[in-house]
Length: 343
Ligand code: SF4
Ligand code: SF4
Image (cartoon, rainbow, N blue to C red; front, side, top):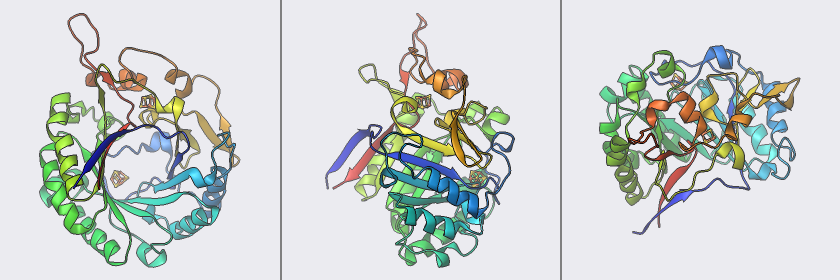
């Protein structure tokens, strides 16, 4: 089997709508990035969800050339299946012609969501699983979570849905990461996304910077695990995180279109800013408005030797310097991924 590995450049002809339709959740994960002070506690009603889906389906809102058929929508929360009208939202997105529809779930699959939508309407259910055993996963995500998530994954596959799995790597579970690919393969997972913990939301409040991985810890385990997953036939991605000297830096906030929409109307274009009122856009009276400076947009323009400006501001612990005070390596954009595909 041939494995193709490549860095996924930001795609100029696609945009992604990360749509948080509510912030409520039944779980209290240790690394949860939801911050009710910044994102609100509202559950959007279905009429508003439909209006906002329409808003991002229009060319020129705010893009000048992208169309809905170039736009992927990812429904998020909190836990999006807690929303009683998620199935209607999915159907509406499908009717509007979004390129793909994904639901990110903790696996509890509330409101009989699998009975209410079909594999023709949902491209992927993405399940968050942070360990290969109850012990590892439930220490991070809460008791009973592992069994429920595995049951949900099996149920989804048995009904013909395509499923992905998301693993958020931190010092609490990195040693367990190599155990994941065979388990996911047995469960019928087709895409495995390895993410790196962000120090925002809960970890930022608790100042848990020790959960962050050093370059050596990341490089020792993640690329090899991703290769194993690809060898087993799964599509696998992981964040690039660090750039070598010869690799060039670019900021997705400047060259890509990603919108992280929260129920209080805030729209960020960089996830690292989500703990601060730095959002570039705001939805007011169901219209998308660009906010005046200072927002994340102006910060993206700063050119610094460390690469990603938000990492420099919010996660300086990630950056290693040499004796002369120069960064040893640049920090990549958090949305730049390495992709492995088996052929
Ligand atoms: S399932 Fe997601 S939204 Fe819920 S607590 Fe965990 S990380 Fe937060
Ligand atoms: S993570 Fe850094 S490089 Fe990526 S969009 Fe945010 S500021 Fe730009």
